[in-house]
Every structure is written in C-alpha cells, then in structure tokens.
Image (cartoon, rainbow, N blue to C red; front, side, top):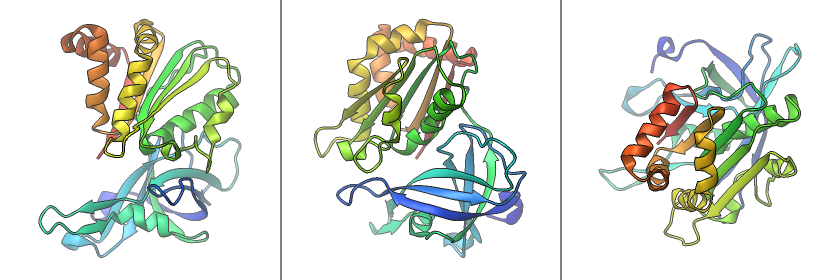
Amino acid sequence: MSEVELGPAVTAKVIESKRITPESTDEVRHIVLRVDEPSFRYMEGQSIGVVVPGPHAFGNKYHMRRYSIANDRPTGSAESVEFSILVRRCFYIDPVNGERYPGTASNFLCDAKPGQAVSITGPYKSPFNVPSDSSANLVMIGVGTGIAPFRAFLQHLYKEKGAWQGQVRLFYGAKTGMDMLYMNDENSDLKEYYDEETFAAYNALAGRPHLADTDALEQSLEMHVEEAWDLFQKPNTYVCVAGLSKLLDSMDKVFSTAAGSEENWQAMKQQMINQGRWSQLFYS
C-alpha cells in the first residue's frame, strides 16, 4: 500500500490501553488515542485507519486496518482530541501450511504502550444512519467488537442529547459472560444506561464451547423477535447492524421466520434500506 493510497495521515499518541476481558478468554482492549491537531474532528459511527509501518508480506510498505470509534463526538474547540477504539487481538491460520500467524494491525495495537505514536488516517464516513429526532426508535444488532459504534451512539443519545423518547434496543451475543464487551466484570460502561426508561439490552450467551457468538445473537433475537419485529413496522425505527459478516445469516434466519418467509423478510429489509432506515457494517 502506497502513501498515495493511504491518504492524509496524522499522528496519534496512545494514552491508555486497558484489557476489558479476563485472561481466560480472547484479549480485547479499550485503547484511548489522542490527536494534537485542532482540525481533527469526528462523529459517532465514523472510523479511523491505523497504519502499521512495514515492510510487510508481498512487499507492502504499509498495512492499514480500520477501527470504529467507540465514543461520542468531541465538544468545544480544544487543541487536542481523545477518542477510543476497541481492538481484539487476532490470529489467522495460513490455509497452505496450517501455521498460526498474528494479525498485523490488532497485535501492533494490543502491544502498543502509553506514549507510543501511532499513524492514523480518516476519520472515514459513517455507514450508519442514526436518527436526530429524539422520538425515533433505534435498534442495534451486533456481536464482538461490532459493539464499538453502538457505545458511541448510546453516549450521544443519553449524555449529549439528554432524555431520548424513542425506544432504544441492543441485541448482542457472546460466547461467555466475560465476552460481553462493556458489559462484564472488567468493564461495565453500558450498564449505566440500564436505568434509562427507553433503553433495553438483550444479551445471550452461546452456552456451549463449540458455539459462536453469532449463535448467541440468534438466541437473543429469537427470544425477543416479536418486539423487534413490531419496531421494524414503525416508520420512525432505524436499524444498525455491526460485527462479523456471518451474523447476517443468523439474523436473516430469525427474521425470515418472523416474516413468514425469506422472501417477505428480504422485501421488508429492502424497504427499510430504501427508506434510509437500515444500515450495516460487516467485517471479516
């Protein structure tokens, strides 16, 4: 990847790197970055690119990976801006030799210490369409680090905007209780919204070691499918979906049953897309 392909980059400094999952499960870190550039501003739902200097495989000089910003927009006109990202330490298996290798960007970030400089690009346009009308409903569906932009949305809706009148629902799945990001004993940021009259989080656990977080999400949706389906029918309901691309199959399975057929569900989803009420972000 060339510097031209990267686009303009700025330097961020690692302020804090905190593991928010226990040693017994996958390592996920909440990392706070600071940019000392007054013109750097972002909105909820946007992402930044983290640039890892090379050399890398195939002769690439740089490696870049995008991460969703996990907090709400900055206020005021400070000379510097702090924001957080959520990073899972990843590994992949080479399909040819079967060897296990560390993911370039995730391991670079998880190993970064406070004070370390990190080159970033962006922020990039948000794929999400979040309502500005406080009477609108918002349904968020996700797994894993897909919860990062949802954390930003909740901060904005309940802290910056104040009382949100519309119904806000979070459907989330995880392998174990400690994989419930921002909702476990290591970090429970999202629990502060449980007292909000309009907010409800529906979480489910995989229950068995061989099951994935998408299986848990499917269970969560099945348990509350009537409520979700009723909200989908309302013209002021907006849906945001984020996480691994495989969650799409789990979601489509549940809502196809609720709709009576896959054809009916796809037609309903397409209608919401056409109306600007459905937005999604999938990653591999």
